[in-house]
Each structure stands twice: as C-alpha cells, then as structure tokens.
Image 1 (cartoon, rainbow, N blue to C red):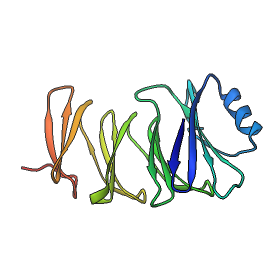
Image 2 (cartoon, rainbow, N blue to C red):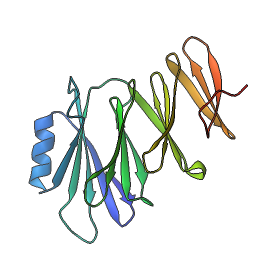
Image 3 (cartoon, helix red, strand yellow):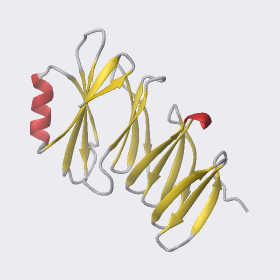
Length: 180
C-alpha cells in the first residue's frame, strides 16, 4: 500500500523477523533509522519506507515492537515534514527527508493511539494509564494519569477520559487540569 506524504510516498509493512526487515531495506539501498532499540522483547517488526521525490536514496524507518497494546501507529504531519510514530512506551517524530529525530517523548505506560487536534496545534498520545498532550513540534504541553484508560473523547475544549474502574474525568484541553 502507498501513502502520500507531501511530494513523497510511503510504503508500510510488517515483517516476520528483524533480520528479514533489515535485509529488505538493504536490498533497496535505503538509509535506515531504527526505533525501539531499547525494548526488552522484540516481538513484532514494522517498516515505513519513504520514497523521496525528487528521486534520492530512500529512507527506511524500522520499528521494533514489544507486541503489547496497539500495533505501532503512524501520524503524518506533511505540513511540518515529520512522521510521528507511537509504539511501545514512546512517541518519536522523524524529519523527512533527512531521517533525523525531531522529537522523542517517553510515556509512563504502553502507547495506545493518537488523536491529532489541528485547530489546537496539538497531538494527544493515549497510553494505558492516561494521555500526553504534545505540540505539533513534539514539545510536551501536559500529561495526565488515570487508572487503566478504557475510553476517551474530545468534547469542545475538553477531553473526557474514562477508566476501567468506572472513574471519569473531564480535562481542559489547554491546561490538562480537571474541570469542576
């Protein structure tokens, strides 16, 4: 499958092994960036190849996953020239076309999903125990912890979180503080 990213396009794939993934990227002569190298148990392997326009050496981004929670997520930010990956317990932004890390944020628990809020210039990164609000450039705005997170929704200028325990909280999107 191809995904358009500005003037470039991406191909995404899962692999049976780390070796198979690395060899496939060598075969296409891609510059490689590997994410998740510090994970304890490498169980799942994913790649994102950026096919650059005008033609240049492709950029291969490898994601080593512990295989817990959600499969790795990719959030496209073509206006910033950044690919944002959420996996394991982190969020990492990779600049295109140079492949440099634009930002990296550690999460206190397993990553679940992204909700981009363009009008707020914010990315919500949900994890097992809460949420981290990041600016589009990756700078942390605020973090909020809750018991095991089960559902979330944006309601106007608020974020509603519900936990497995049945607790619910309504947060102010700007400050991350609970509303009365």
